[in-house]
Length: 283
Image 1 (cartoon, one colour):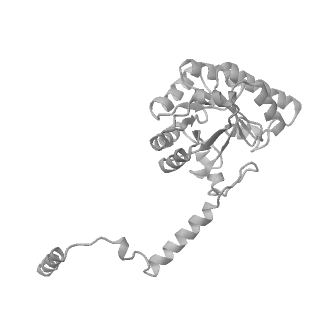
Image 2 (image 1 turned 180 degrees about the vertical axis):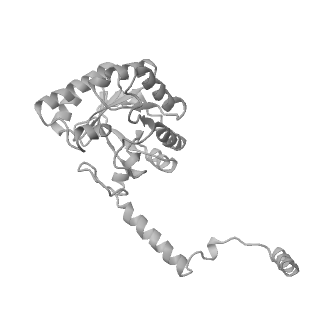
Image 3 (image 1 turned 90 degrees about the vertical axis):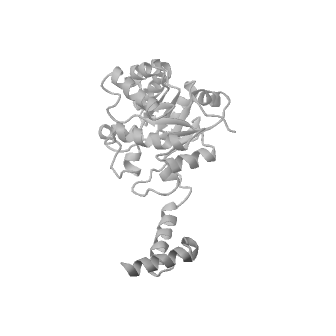
């Protein structure tokens, strides 16, 4: 039996130079599949706002929506570490509110950790949540909840001052007690520098080859979401086409009476059927 992947597993993986695998998941069925495949961690990401709910960004996603999906995932995964994404404005106003909301992910939704966006500006919040015995994964670089500040989904840290700021952000999160840091949409060389400077694992998404692990949105990986495809997303399948072909075939079979066939039906005894016919005549 495989063992549960934990916060300590993340740290051990970096120490032993073993790459960490992480994907997003939003429901029971996908969580089961990911867990059976041996994925190390499942992130219930607020990216569900875009790939599940059809919104333009993650900003509108609420904590109740996140908790619902986290509960679904928790029922399907037994060995992967489960990380809940804290949505916009659930950890920004005060440390007390951040702890309370983070606690809901652990207590109500059976997550093993939470993820939040921001570097130095969120270090005190991270420290407070960790002090409350809740593991925290950081997230710097392109932070989707700040899309309105960034003016769109753009690569971060290309200028010297911005690159230095990201290094400082990573160090601040490590100091605050984060067990890992997601680096999103930053130059590969900068991600390499950050990965070497911090003792905690870095998880890349559009951050190149030198991070301690990788994460992708599972809908991008499987070719199920075509509204927007990031440069860094590798499509391992084209399930949208497969699903489209399957549904089209189903529609055709129903209309031409090719489905259902005999093997898809249930039987009833002749004796009961005879009585039913007699009953029908009496009505």
